[in-house]
Image (cartoon, rainbow, N blue to C red; front, side, top):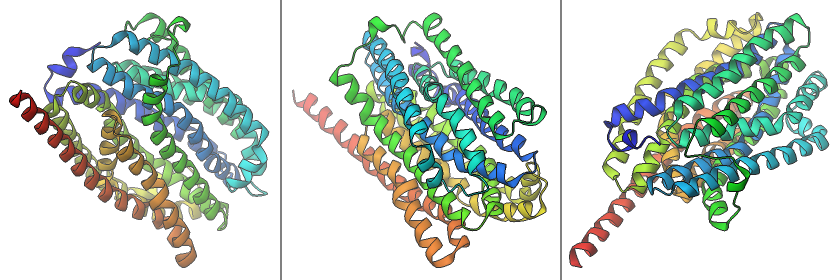
Length: 454
């Protein structure tokens, strides 16, 4: 337990100590996702490339179930550590571990049973159906490990061990990147090889996390004897985990709709959208890494009632995010065509993809604001604001923008839907944070007045 980090480090030093390993871990996740796209792209088969793009939202759904226990449990663990309730932390982490395994097995079985329906919903066509089905079978079998990999990294990060969480992610990614060219290209397995490499990578990450939880930590536990399924534990995990799950599910559903709409314009368009989306995930994941990295610090200091340090971390992180987003947008705008061309040697996809890319990056300079505020709400246990932001970006804003955009503007409307939704959500997140922080300040003032009066 790194109490010195949470209580005594300067705010910038504490933020960087927690956030940099998390950001590096997220960058590893980007390369993890890009690896399949890159090596499948080397087959120069638009149908195989399109199938990987179409299945990506399903993969995100599996990660969403892991986040119920990872972010929901991690938020509760950080607050318990701030309250010095170390024994209860062990029960929470043990519950998250076994509940995640159970949920992963159930979801994997459901995917195998209802695979045809999921593939149709994802926008699979006659040209991509067989490729997408082969990929999904492997991913379904590996579902428990995909869920666990996502959950355990978050739980380990909650005790301040951001570096160990990053190492686990890096192990899985390195294994995946090594196996991808061997299985996809050398062995000629195509998308099946990509799926197998992904699952093996997740298994390796989980093995490392289990080693850490059984040998390295004195705070967390996955011992069965520590497992407790009390109403208090379930409520505090779900009250934050469910909004995160809703956000992830809406992201996946929105992307399923997005891919379905895009598939109406052909496989070339689907591939032209998929490549810039993967590249654009680089700055997005850095911003998410920053916001998740400061979450334990915010949760700890909120529980310890050190609001000055909490707010200082939020302001510093927001400034870093805006600077990084601005620089990245300028680089991506002028390098759009060569970046897309790295993934596939198809002139039509490169031309169309670079145009789409320039549209997708429009909100990037201020995009991190919504992630920082949403993770802040999760860290301090404010479920309703967290839920509002969760359902806004990919639900209330994005899905209507997609439907209206396609109805009136065709493909242009589909492409512009995400930037428009992001700008709307950023505005809402700012209003919500000002409101919530104002409520916290009023609560503190009232308590101080009552103490003074007594």
